[in-house]
Image 1 (cartoon, rainbow over the protein chains, first blue to last red):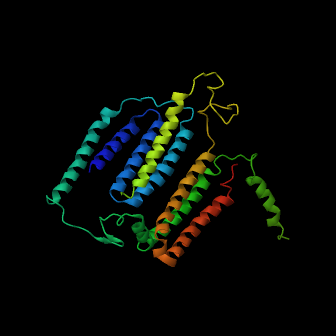
Image 2: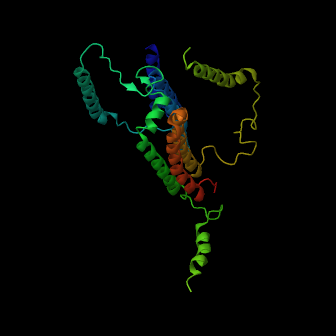
Image 3: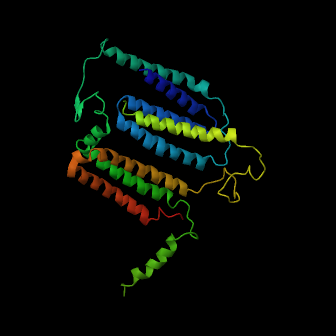
Length: 201
Length: 117
């Protein structure tokens, strides 16, 4: 339990660090600490696969993409300067939203009977939920993914394929440089023309 | 012993080593800076432009493709763990998965997405 509080403090502190930094690169470093602490939190919940994915995908790939975006968009731009303070105008709606959210939370908690929770242990493929290396482990996730959740898994392949094609379509030819490299659409079209016209007569 | 203890030891060694790399040279090295030493190091070549210059969008393309293929590679992980339990059934599912992504891969290759043009 003390580990949870340690991780919670790290999570909140790194999140505040992320949103208060003037330089976006420092924000990314704060976000990295945040993601790693979240992964550690997943590991304490025996959600092994989620923790590994949090590190590999979020800390590895997504954050690297953030660094690329910062390098591309903020090149030649100094640290962010504070704009006009818009906080007083949004304070009332923000407070209202927070109160409503807390109201829902308290309502939800009040629905539950007080005292210890009743034993609730649905079994997984590999044993009792709550035991280490069962629910949320990589093996359990693998069995579920390749048997019950097969269709979403294969649909994911199609979504990733569409994403790959979309990236090339959007970013691939965004900067046409016909004089450099071997990719010359105009020249290729000229080469293709006689082949198409040959069987005409 | 906690099953994550080796990971913890690995992380601790990595943290100590990288902290040492950052701190020890500052303590041991002599400081005699001159203008040439203070330049931004660019593989021994004379710096051609400012550090905060513009980047070609090609870098962004590479980054996006990396993210997508990273997600794809992560899908192999649960299969690799349960490969023996899933038998040929799992292998066939994975082949379908890879073939679908292979179409996207072939498209990028055909379009010259892996060429630095």
